[in-house]
Each structure stands twice: as C-alpha cells, then as structure tokens.
Image (cartoon, rainbow, N blue to C red; front, side, top):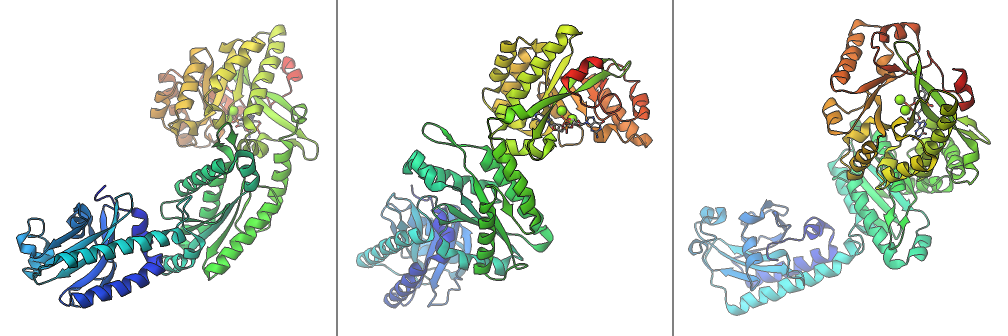
Length: 581
Ligand code: C2E
Ligand code: MG
Ligand code: MG
C-alpha cells in the first residue's frame, strides 16, 4: 500500500491539537540532536504533499502549509521505502534526488525521512530531516527517528477519533468552531444547516443497531453527495448532522438554502434506506441559519438553526425553516394532507375528471386525459398540484397512481360499452417509472380489468428524458412492446431537446400551453409551427395543450392530423358528463 495516502488526515491535521503539541516537542528534540538540519512533519493524500509543521533551525525557508506534488517530493521516498526509513547522506549521489530542485539549489545536501504509517501499512505522512550539507546518519539515528515516527502515528490514531466520528467518518462537533472561523475568514458567508433524523431510536429498535449504524453511514454519504463538494458535513449527535457551506451574499443564500433543503428533503423522503429485510423510509427536520447576516458567531448560528429545526419538528416532519412564519402556515396544511393521504378513507374522497382531446380538424372527441381530484373533508376540492408533490414526497404516489390507472380503465370501459371507444391518457409520476416493476404493475391492471392496451397512453414529464435511469428505460420499452403508448407532457418549456426524444421510445408530444397560447406575435407562431412540423417529420403524434380561444383554434386547425386539448373545447368533466359531449 506504499504511496497511498490518508486523505482524511491530510486535511484534518490543523484540528489535531494533541498532535500539534507532541510535534512541537519532538521537532525541537530532533533539532537539538541534529544541529545542521531543519526538521518537519508532512502529510500526503497520494497526490499532494503538505508540510504541516516545521522546526526550520538552519533557515532553509520551508514554510508551513507548503504543498507540492507528492510524486516530486522527497517525502515520497520515505513512503516508498520498505524499511519505512530512508537516509540519503548525499543528495547528489542518489539517482532519485540528484536533480531535485532542493539539491540543484543547494548544490548538495542530506535527507532522512521516516514514514508515519497506519497499522494497515498505508502511509499518512513522514517525519523528515533535511540539510544543505551532506551528513552520514548512523544506524542508531535512523532507528531513533523511525521510532519517533511510530509514536506520531500513535498520537494521530488516538486523536483521529476526536476529530472524526468513527461510524460516518464525518467531523465531530468539537472541531466545528475552528472550522467555522477558518471558513468565515476565507469566505464571505456561511449557510449552516442542522438536520435531524426523526425517531431514530425507534428505527434502531425496529431494525437492530447494526442496521441503524448502516443507515447512518448511508445517510452521511447522501448528505455529502447532495450538498456541494465545498460543504463540510459533521455529525454532532447520534441522529443530528450539521452542514456548513460557504455562500457569499451575492450567491443568493436564501434561495440556495431553500433549493438545497428541498432537494435533500425530497431525496431522503422519497428514497428508502435498504434494511436487511425491508425498505425503511426516514423523515428529517431541518433548520438553517446564515452567517454573518443573521448571526455573527458559530454558537449563535448553530443555536438559531437548531431552534428552527425544533420548530419544524413540532409541525410536520420534513419542513425546513429558513426564516418567516409564512412557511409555518403552509406546513400546517401540508402536515394535515400528509397524514390524510395515509388514511384508508382516501380512495372514497378521490375521483377522476376527464378532459377531452379533440381532432383539430373537426373537433371530434378522440380521447380523454384523466385528472385526479381530491375532495378533502376540510379543504374541499383540491387541485393535484397542491397534494401530488406531498404524495410523492411521502411515498403514497405509487398506490394512488395505480388507483388512477385502474379507475380510468374502468370508467372508459363503461363509456366504451355505449359509445365509440376512445383513448385514455393517464399522468405518471417520475417516481412510479423509477420502480423496477412499474411496467408489470400497469400490465397486470390492464389485464385484470380487460382494458385494450392500445387505448392507453401514459403521460410522462419532459425531465425524465434527462435521467439516465435503467428502470425508466426498461419500463418504457416493456410498456411500448405491449402496445401502450408514451406521451411527453408539457413539452417545450423544460430542458429536454429533440436529440433526447430520439433516444427514448416516445409516441406523442403534448405541446405545453405556455408555448401554444401566446400566438400574439408572428415569431411565436413560427416557433410553434416549426415544433409541430419537426415532430411530424420525426413520426410523432402531437397534442396541443391549453387551447382557450377561437383564435387559437383557428390557427391550429391547419394542423389537421393533430389533436388539441383545452378550455375552448371542454373543461375536465366527471365520467357521467362525458356521453353528453
Ligand atoms: P397536466 O397533465 O399538464 O394536465 C393539464 C392541466 O391543465 C390540468 O390541470 C387541466 O385542468 C389544465 N388545463 C386544461 N386545459 C386548460 C386550458 O385551456 N387552460 C388552462 N389554463 N389550463 C388547462 P390539473 O387538473 O390541475 O392538473 C395539473 C397537473 O397535475 C397535471 O398537469 C398533471 O401533471 C398533474 N396530475 C393530474 N392528475 C394526475 C394524476 O393522476 N397523477 C399524477 N401523477 N399527476 C397528475
Ligand atoms: Mg398531463
Ligand atoms: Mg400538460
């Protein structure tokens, strides 16, 4: 394992107080024994060598904090030596050091390096002597420095447990204040997040401590991945983490805080942790504060964020607080909805409305889109945009999504028994498509209620095209091979582009109403026309969404192969009202 450095130690050394004291004494003692040498301790991570602490008694200008590529450093010779001590009496006589910049500058010199190693054999750094004069080290001298290097290794390992948490390898609370100060001196501002896992004790009891530990390790990894590389995460209590992130005032700290918090919350609430025999969903609370606008000391910042986290904890799990009380009001309703989505009675309160999709040439009804509605006992009829995101965040969307498909098929079979059968389009959440067996679930429902698969269209969002998710692609291909068609909903306002359409098995583009509506300028008309023609040349069917006026209809009528949908033709209606249309 020679040469493989310990990246953790490399960056952590400034927070090792014991090591610092021990090294001061050791370097001075060594310097006394070798009056013609300067003495230093360096660490490396395999890439960079960093001089951490120096007793430069002969004035060789070796600055603390100096970094150089590890492969070009003299220290690498100690790391590479099997005996872990390398002594070079004359730098000009040794092939590896002859043309080193130090040798060239001094004309000669001597070097002794003793590797500081881990019990597993990897090297963390080296204890070194260097002089601009040749010097023959005795056997005893070499052995002595070698034993001091082993002592340094012992001190490091002892202290490592106080700097890093052995379980998650994140920083302990005691090193946060000096890190905060350092960050504050270097960066203009700091966002401080306090994140706590709800009911961790209970999770531990349910799954056993070993599984609980594994969950914490994975949680820490996700934390590191979801926040930026500049973020410093730490575990300050068994179930509580702090993340410090440099963020200047002109980087819009509040916006950044909200974005990061929402993204992380969404990830944690929607992705279960794999336990031995089941998936464990985890709820978290988060509080955020900002230095220096709100608080000017680490302790204050931590306290403010902690208070906010606790306030969020009393309300719904999963809220994060940046500031204002407005968030509290929203979260109260969210809390109610989240609990009520979990009730057995939910499906008696849900129903589907159907919005017709018509042929643009003659306005004949060709299909319908199913739109789910919730008649909430306290809030009344709720539009999907209010509660679908909550259902997604708390894992209810899978059951609700299946209910929508089944109910839609049943309603359309009833309609088809009396009338010409029409297409049924159903909206699908990205979370559903990421499930490995989503396609099988859909096919099972369709088979069970005997709905013709070639009458079913699944509407997916444009952003799914940007994902490189194996399950998504497999599901789409399986569904399509069985005759179910795929439509891209709200196309043209997101991020996806035409080359992605080609990669995915897509049948229908639904042009978003933001694009289809503003027909005010000739340029706008040209854009929509170009989009429709391009789709046509790619062999895709189009549905223009959000047609609200006679002018819009008149314009789109020329695209007589395509369909339209919008309030101009029909608003969404209950299944009983469909036959009258
Ligand atoms: P969407 O799939 O793009 O559905 C179209 C939305 O636009 C519907 O709103 C519809 O009522 C509305 N709309 C239709 N024509 C017009 C028009 O001419 N002008 C205007 N201003 N609006 C029009 P709704 O029902 O509130 O649904 C909103 C979104 O909720 C849907 O957007 C869809 O993304 C989601 N959604 C609805 N039902 C479901 C469901 O069963 N599952 C999932 N996952 N999402 C659903
Ligand atoms: Mg839709
Ligand atoms: Mg749409």
